[in-house]
Amino acid sequence: PLHQRLLPVLEVCRAIGDVHTQYGLAHGDIKPANILVHHGRLTKILDFGLVDVLSSDSVFDRPVRGTPAYMAPEQWRGQISAATDVWSLGILIYSTVFSALPWTGSDKNQIDQMRSGSVRIQARGIPKDLVAIMHKCLGYASQSRYANAAVLADDLDRFLMRRPIAGSSTMRRSFLFALRHPVAMAVGLLVVLGMTTMAIYFHRRELAMQELHSHVNLR
Image 1 (cartoon, rainbow, N blue to C red):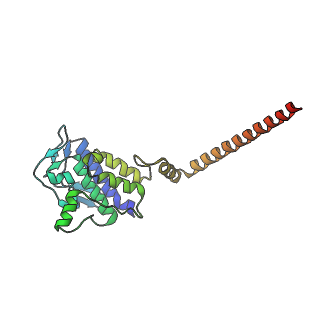
Image 2 (image 1 turned 45 degrees about the horizontal axis):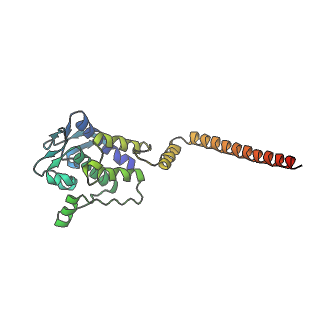
Image 3 (image 1 turned 180 degrees about the horizontal axis):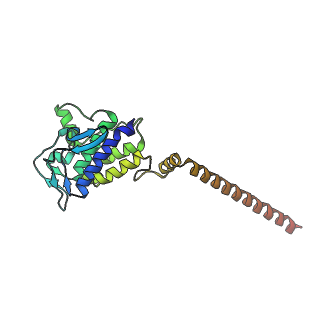
């Protein structure tokens, strides 16, 4: 099941989140080859050879480095930050959901797509909140993505727990609440229905009384 396949990805997001928030580092080369998973559980993240210390502006200008299929648009310009790791995690989520990368091969057109960050997400049959998470990870502008992997992990965890992610619509939040708490939702609907019925009753009664008084006054 999709949720089961995403559990190791959630652990990777949490681990990279710790790298960002606790150690002030950016990994710079997140990809499956650098992730060890045993029996569905994350055991180790490898290859911190491209790691950078997050500075005050949280962006580094370096020679271009990384794994092309997982590199954010700005990483092709030598910039590495927490946001570039978030992009790589977004590609990891994408490949887990669709069992493929958004691009394959190494011809010039595909490389240009990688560098431009033009990721197309086929949303049909995919939960809306998961699509929203991928879009948030894969925003072209680094500022439009999750601030760091810890924030991404929080949203992915909410999705896997069938809780509304940050920014979910009110209707979507209500639907997810109903799935998690059907009894409470049913009681709430009965209360609302009862209050609505009472309000209609008293409104009609008031109209009837007004009509009666008008007839009495006419006499």
